[in-house]
Length: 330
Ligand SMILES: C[C@H](OP(=O)(O)OC[C@@H](O)[C@@H](O)[C@@H](O)CN1c2cc(O)ccc2Cc2c1[nH]c(=O)[nH]c2=O)C(=O)N[C@@H](CCC(=O)N[C@@H](CCC(=O)O)C(=O)O)C(=O)O
Ligand SMILES: CCCCCC(=O)CC
Image (cartoon, rainbow, N blue to C red; front, side):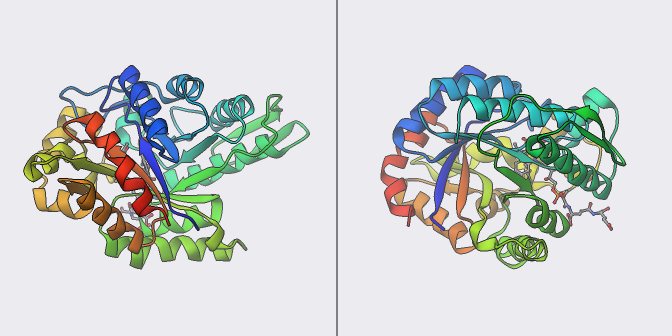
């Protein structure tokens, strides 16, 4: 499968209008896809933003010509009802055929706790996500009103009137071994997050493929997408520190425990060692360095990159891809 290079226009790191300008610029440079985080609270406190992703996506689709756009990712189980998630993305895909996707996952405390007060365990949230995906697919696929009584969600003669002619591609997030297997079983494609290449190669991708095969799918036809941050600057140390905004994502307890105050997340992020940032994210001084970084993760099995630009000079971090894109696409 051909390698695709996407641009992650962060609504936590940039003001929504700035993320929109980056998106238009990224399409002009030749990126294959655009991805936006779907958050209520952000992963950092200082200078952070947190715009609503679906509202932003409508504007981004209208402002661009042909690039594919998806959230990365939407949690369809708590602050959002899965039927409304299904309706939103069906509407967008009917308006912009072939250009809209949705990625789903089991959620983060910072987005769900502030507005629901609830925080179920990881296995329970994963089970809720499986059921949410079933609800979404039923609404997308059924020609009749749907009645469904699950453990978590209910549909009572629910019918989706506005549907796309083609389906909405669904990326399923998996970070741990169970999550990755579920992605293979229930998703059209895998969406994961930057991790050590050895973990991706030895655990995440094999588990995803196992889940897909057990569900009767050919994993060779499914994308292995990954969100990862990059920072490019002629001063290497400055490039590394550019990724600091996202260092909280390298702290595993952020996903298990009920940490939802961005100031507390930021305290953890600031304690992450710079070597951990270098290993898990991409840091480079020039195009050649970035190409090597992308190759490191291609070798681990990733074939769709969602690249979050954390470079000190954001436009430099986009324009440098004129040189990078031809070298990393096979
Ligand atoms: C925590 C791990 O669970 P997993 O299901 O694999 O992944 C969870 C993530 O998908 C979500 O948190 C997701 O919402 C995060 N996310 C995101 C994900 C992604 O791939 C790309 C981009 C984004 C951006 C984004 C996200 N979320 C949003 O709301 N908005 C966004 O924009 C995990 O490690 N799972 C392990 C199990 C770990 C565990 O807790 N185990 C238990 C014990 C379990 C047992 O014994 O049965 C424990 O330790 O207590 C796994 O194996 O799946
Ligand atoms: C391991 C990091 C998960 C992704 C975190 C996130 O929400 C980024 C937008």
